[in-house]
Length: 359
Ligand SMILES: C[S@@+](CC[C@H](N)C(=O)[O-])C[C@H]1O[C@@H](n2cnc3c(N)ncnc32)[C@H](O)[C@@H]1O
Ligand code: SF4
Image (cartoon, rainbow, N blue to C red; front, side, top):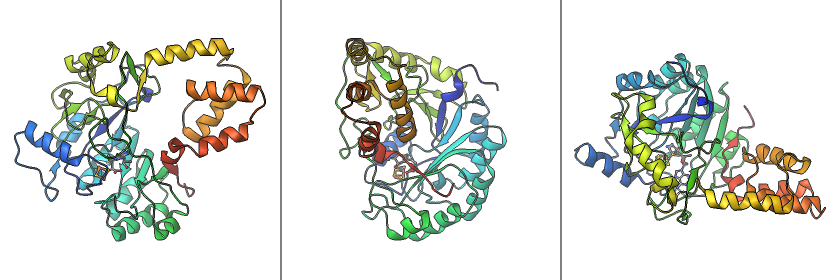
């Protein structure tokens, strides 16, 4: 199936199983396991017996996704707790899809590493075992697979951790990784940074377009597809990808209702409690401030600041940052080195997965 214009930044997540036994302290497994069981009239899901997406179902669904939409293996579980995950990734890659993988390596075998060497992996974020044991990742298997990955030709490898990492892990990857900031998954867990509810119209910043029309959905093992990575309670089912088309998901009543609520003054919707939501009113106020402060988004200072942000934070500078730094640079109160230092001390920089120095 061909893509349509503007799909380049789009992505869709496949949750290959429900019931992640890695059971990290900061991850709402209890919510996804109980909601999935309830919706599918299953007995309680156990960590020892997760619900798996079948390979046949995966193949049926992937064929419906436009080729220029990235396929992400991540979300509500550890992808490799499904023994067919490697095979699924190989099929998707052989069929021309760009892939992303987020994994703790739990369940990954040497044969899976061989598959990863051959496929079109745009981004591979390894969630490292932490000393505090927030994530229940068995260290021996983890480091054994990690060594194989580091010594392989696999490209685009990044690292993150939610705690501090062991000296052994540091030696394997050749660098240290600081703990990422924990979020509360839009109110789904008690730990993590709480996000203040936003009122007024909002936009989702998950995709760079900041359009409420392309929020990346999550496919569950039975094909049910929910709104986004924050919808752990599976409140917003857009359709079932085994029977509907990719476009149907975004044209569904549920999706349209969500978009309408996001544009409303204050209707309740999951996105109001998400750190990735942006207030339209705040954005408009900032635009006015640009004019008052005589900030031109295309002047030399703005463009240099954009370049620094892209290098260190993988995104252009936000209006708050621009207002904060532009005036100080213009008045020669600070230089660009100070901006860099400021960014590198920020929680956002710490939380961004760090690229392996060997790839
Ligand atoms: C939910 S996990 C699923 C993929 C895989 N099981 C893993 O842990 O990498 C996707 C990403 O979310 C991160 N994550 C999990 N809980 C988080 C939290 N409370 N705050 C911020 N990131 C979190 C994980 O570390 C991982 O990078
Ligand atoms: S491994 Fe990933 S999905 Fe599993 S509990 Fe930890 S963060 Fe959640």
